[in-house]
Length: 397
Ligand code: PLP
Image (cartoon, rainbow, N blue to C red):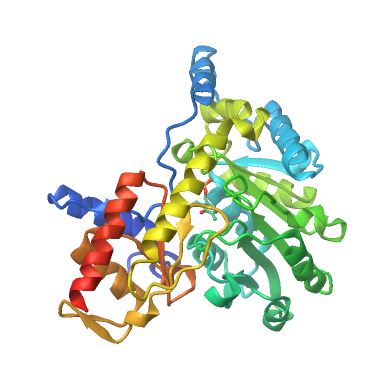
């Protein structure tokens, strides 16, 4: 639309949100669709966190909040970083935002100039590329595949670096692949990055607690990377608080100050009630939310077993988050129920229309061979969805 800015015209619509909208549309038209497309826990907010929010309303928290977050919330975040990650931050190094998405958008806005390159180990979370593009950055994908568990090698990282490289963004545990970088693997990447001091690392750790390996490693734990790393986290995934919109960063003070300045002009401080509830969520040890992690682990085992019965899905074992990311490229070039499948988008649409199961195309995540299936759904839904996919594909053979 020529009436709109070039900026927004060139922006992609979030593929996950687009799939959610399409699913809702079909559901409203009376179709029985099982939605496995959203990156959202199906749990409700833990009672102790709800109680804190209710108390905050009763205690009359209602005013504008400090742009970078309440002082006592920053203290709770400092406690959390120390307790869970062994990371030391001062209040001036912390910024609370309206979801980790805003934390990432702030970082892109304050760090990138027109033409700066952003290294994105692929597959990566959908929004990274457009958040960077809108800030003038150029996404540079670093490919991986199911054969390396969707993790990049130090060699691939080094090959992608140019004098214009300004930032690298990755998530571990990873959305969409569920891959988790071990401390040793991160160190190998750090050994490359130390040679290029201009590159800032954005380590998105929002799935930290949903990790089945028992080890969560942070780039900022390495002394030689601490001053160049921004750690992003939030309460959406681990505390099932997606709609409460609280994310935060810990990082170098000059970057935190810049994010504060940017946010102060764009949205101001995050929601007061959600911030109060987040204090309660974070000061309690993560054992409090282990029941959700245990449920995800059980569902992972279940979905992997069911997926293994579906013809020509190539699946690895994800170590965290709540997604599986099967390679379905076998179906490219085939015609299923009269529909030509040439891309992962075609395949995902086929599953939606023919099997009534919503997934997301891997293309949006920088991997054109895969689709993302979320198992943040009930066991019954997962079973029924896998049955539908299996039967639909078997009937087309
Ligand atoms: N980072 C990753 C990897 C995500 O998957 C998501 C949510 O889908 C976010 C960040 C954004 O989280 P928030 O709800 O805190 O904005």
